[in-house]
Image 1: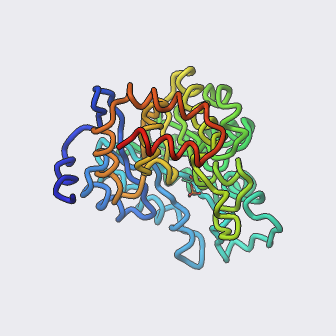
Image 2: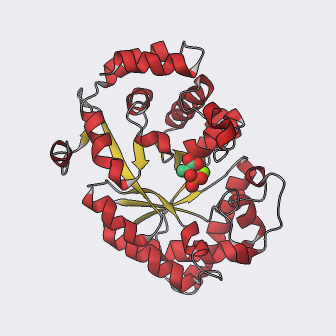
Length: 322
Ligand code: PEP
Ligand code: MG
C-alpha cells in the first residue's frame, strides 16, 4: 500500500474527472515542514503557532518568532504557508500568561479574543509574521473569529504594524493575504458577509463540530455525540463553501475532517479548494481524490443532504463509495 501511495508523489491532486484541488499539511513547528515536503504537500494550510508560546516559560520574542516563521517560509519556497495567530485558551493553556480560570474555557477568553485584548503580544506576533512574509508565500489567518468586528479590528492591527515596519524600512509583503478560520457557527451561518472582508476561509471542523453540537471535543462522556457527519455540520460546511465562492474567495479546511477518507468525496463534491491535514495523511488523501469522480460524488452528496441523521449519512457513504 505504501508503494501505491508513494506513486502519488509528484502528482497533482486531481479528481478522476479532472477537477483540481490542493492537499497541504498542518504543522506545529517550523521543523514539521520537512514532513510536509517528504509527503509532497502542496504547502502548509495551518501553522499552529501556539507551540512557540507553550514550550517555554515566557513569551517568545519577535526575533525568535521571526526566525521560526522565516525558516518555514524559506523551506516552502513558492508554496503557501498559512500562519495562524496565537490560539491560546480552550484546551491550550499557557501558564505564564496567568489567564484566570474560567467556568467554560472553550467559550471564554481564547485566541483572537485574547489577542485583541493583549495588543502588545499580538503586535509582536504580527510583526514577526509580516517580516517573514518577505521570504516566501506567507498568509495570515485569525482563529476563533465570531463576529465581523473582530475581523476588522484584527485587520486594522495588521495595517498599524505594516505602517511601523515601513517606517523602520523593514521588508514585508504589502499584499499579504488575510484569512479567517471558520470554526464558530455564527461565521458559517453568516459566511457571505465575512467573505467580503477576507481573502480566504479555512474551515476548522474540530471546533466547528464542538460548537455546533455543543459537545466538548475532549470530553469522552459525550464523545459519541461528536460527529462530523451530523447533517447540521455538513450543511454549515456546504454553506461556507458556497458563500465563499459566491464572493470569489478560496475555501479550505484544516480540521481533522479534511483528511478523513469518507469525508473527502463529500468535500470534493461541495467544491472545497484546499485540504490541509497531518503530513502522514497527505498521500492517502491525494489517492482518494484521484480515485473519486467529482460528478459521481455530487450525486452522493445530494442524497446525503436529504438524510436526517449521522448514521444514515455514514451508511449512505459506505454503500456508495467503495
Ligand atoms: C479546528 O478547530 O478545526 C482547528 C484546525 O484548530 P485547532 O484544532 O487547533 O483548534
Ligand atoms: Mg480550532
